[in-house]
Length: 108
Image: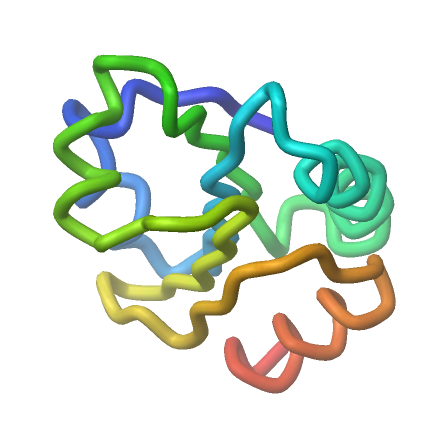
């Protein structure tokens, strides 16, 4: 998984043909800690067919994108492809649930 400075690269990251799952998280967040292993499993299953980007909401470099998308709870997950937001939800999900969501919304 990649950690990015969201203000510099969010539009570039979400604009490609490969679907991108953005995980807005915080290090102090219990549900975020539960989501991290599910994201690892999802990445193993889908490999290069999906990018997973983690954005720490407490990092000051990410404040603009957190505000831009109104992230008010963590984890907040967003699925993007070709610059279009395909799905968004807050809360922990299992790897199986995430895989179903990605496959359904990103036509994989």
